[in-house]
Structures are given as structure tokens and as C-alpha cells.
Length: 168
Image (cartoon, rainbow, N blue to C red):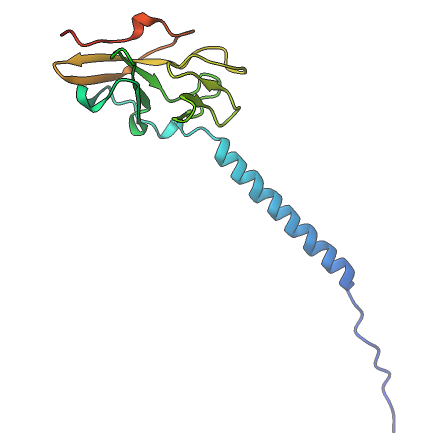
């Protein structure tokens, strides 16, 4: 009887090499996912904001003195100062255009892109930002507050003349 000499099938890749490639591939995939999430987080959401012109914010009684109301879809915060004056601030940070967030606990606006913050009237508090938040024109028509998002004013710092008061 003739016996065949059967040699084992040659291994094209060792088990160790396979595990190294697998772990390397998973690490590369995790790195890409982390980079993608970071990019989406830092990417400005300002492009989703529509500046449509005049926005009817509400009636005077809707905004108590010392309040900050966000109008996310229209791209502004409406501030009613403690003395009753109104100011509309753009939600875009003047540095990179990221959307600033209002933090009620600290009475300040924070930019998530570079950790700058602004006081309750939009004045910048720390670099890299070098100027205040931009503002929109506010008008009072009877007892209704109107914000014109087509009229953006770039500013260096808050000026008390920017506050709009009722005529009564």
C-alpha cells in the first residue's frame, strides 16, 4: 500500500499577524469615528439658522425683566435687562461662528468651540474672542416685541444706547 505524504496546508498568515491586523484595523476605525464625532461637534450649527427678516418675538409681558429667551430657529437671544430694556443678540460667536449657549446658573453665554464666554449683555470675557456678540435691531410695536434679523450690527462692546424701551 502506498501512503501519500500529505503536508499540512501552508499558512498564508500567522494567527499572531491576523490578530495584529485586526486590532490595528479596529483602532483605525475607532480613530476615524472619534474624529468624525469631534468634527460634527465643533462644526458650526449656524448654517441651520434662518435669518428671515422681522420676527414677532411675543408681547412685552412674555419677557420678565432680567430674562434671556432663546429663539434658536431665528438665530438670536432676546434679553430683557433688569431696567426693562430689550436687546437681541446673535447666537453666532464672532470668532468661529459657533453657536453660543446661555448658562442660566452663571448668567453668561459660552462658546463650545473654544471655551470663550460672554456676559449677559454679550461682552466678551476672555480670548480668543476679541469683541462682543453681534446684535439685531429690536422694535416695540404697541405691546409686541419685534426683532429684525436682517439688520445685524457688529459691535465691540455693549453700549447702553443699544437697549430698546417701550414708549409708554
